[in-house]
Image (tube, rainbow, N blue to C red; front, top):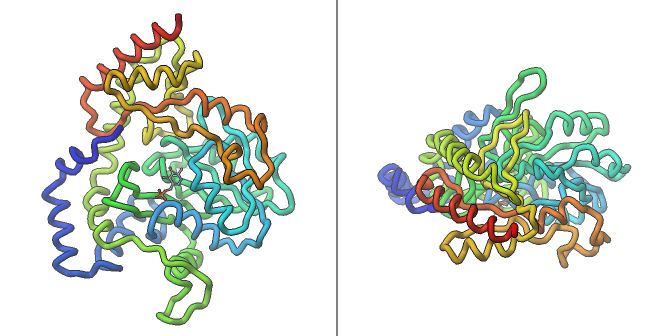
Length: 374
Ligand SMILES: *Cc1c(COP(=O)(O)O)cnc(C)c1O
């Protein structure tokens, strides 16, 4: 799906040098690269503060911990997302409240949120799925009206830009109370292992989040809060410092690759290409098709026969996962999420994907769709 090695080779000297420097300094935890990265990453996103942490799931958990919620408080999330979004909520004894998604954008259906709000609702976690922002303008209105906090799960949409109706532009992850993201190797900005971060505009909140991620301490061995241990290793920060400089270029290349697919696949019967919203750019973390002729699994295996990998993000919606049955949902509760689980198919996309490979994928899909349509 992704060629991480060729991406490394394009910046090998810089990355090797940065890693060697960490080894030479042997300051593997909280070395200078961590601080440097937090500063540059904040600048990139035009946000006041960045707190780095161990991974994107931790980032969600830490964000929720910073809200001082109590057991049973409800947090609204989309029904079609990666499990981490629900997991962080469940782990803290909070209740994930699911809302169905929009068939065209794959993101939370904002129209369906208000009917799910109760006295126990404290937060909404929109997920900017596949690389495109949820409808933040309407989400922020709802949050303000009902006094809810928004935590943006930006693990897939780092670098996407949102435009409000008044023309104001913001980076994904900087519009809500807290933004969280992941530097998992295949994400838009990936390190060489696990990594994550929180984006925060409020100084006091940022200080608190820093403490939570560091055993609840500001001063060593004085634990003012119950925290956790979640750190971005210096080696990963050093890699990220190099890669951050190429992030916009990488996203532009993803967009160009997406255009190649879109031009090649838009007329194809039985398939629907991803749609763009008027308010968000698309960073194409994934290029996700809908196989509307309902032969998705056959299409997937036929692609594989031709040597083409594809992925289903995600085959089982949260409410039908075994581990999440305690929340009392059943089949039929979220028809769009259930439908998407049956028809979505993501095809390979990464910044330097060769055009001839994309053409091979387009030609193969054209041939397979003709067969499955008849
Ligand atoms: C990857 C991802 C996460 C979790 O990030 P990790 O670094 O793997 O813990 C959370 N939410 C979404 C939507 C993701 O895609």
